[in-house]
Image: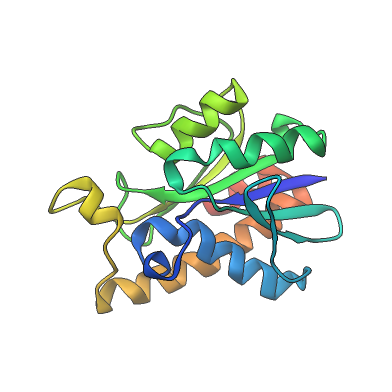
Length: 181
């Protein structure tokens, strides 16, 4: 069993924000891989959709507390660190960029910081999606929406991220890195 986690903030007001690209990738994955409908699981504080040998997870704790949702799921399903993949936004990369890593630090991302603290490790795979460097305060940037021009780039990279997750599910993280980095 693999755990595929997309980071974002719950609520309609955040749906199209830069911070919610992880949720958007999971919605596309759910549609493409024909998993179960999203179901809110209160004990995990997350929306979950089941696939054949994986779970798609959207924490409903707000970004900065993502670890509170992921840790109980990882523990209950006995998911190893190697079977955890997290998809999230990254201000360090231009809009439309995708980078895959096997492990790493939080890089200033509070959702990843929460995961590392809750899991007690930074060893888990990630797909980072570039949302561009902020021209205003970081909080305003990540909670802002993409421009019309940026929306085209984001649509492309979301599709690329879906394909990268499929490669990860089929052949592992190293294959996904070789194909999509």
